[in-house]
Image (spheres, rainbow, N blue to C red):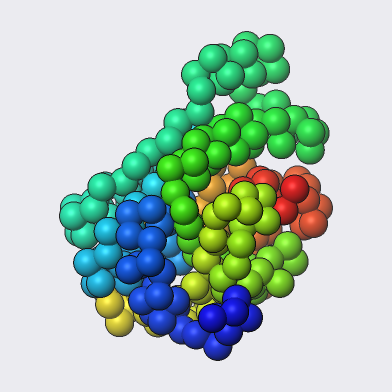
Length: 229
Ligand code: SF4
């Protein structure tokens, strides 16, 4: 099958292809937003041995930890947490303070590199394929993400975005139908879940990702996790 053929496949069909092929070498990168919870629900219903992992930056919302705990108990899954290297965080905050990411895009990327990118590379080193809950309508930086293909930053890996063509309404409809637990921040107008100091609630009609790094321009609003280098 060619990668382009995956575009016509549903999320469940993509999982049905990937799970037997990769087993526990398939990872789900989860920040415990509603899209990730949909994927966790799907793989749990398949009894799939997918590795669910998260990047614990040390700056997450309390509600996100509560959602992780809910996912653990509801689905009986293990959540692999990857932390940043303590020496790097100690140097960062000792030399630049606790909010250096607000001072410039470079500083923000430095913080994301230490707290997210390095732990992600360790997580991916244990996998053959990974998937995310990214959707094309989430932002201008995501309009062309494929449903499946090589990870352009790690060419030995396959990257899957089974919900790439889902709308927000589809995600909410799945959650309601399957009674999927969701991060309570969504009810407080946080459509996108990230680190607490870099995420805020949005106003009605605002872009979904406008609450992330709201002091930056939209084209800069990726932490690097999903952007080709
Ligand atoms: S989102 Fe903010 S706090 Fe989290 S790693 Fe990036 S810059 Fe640092």
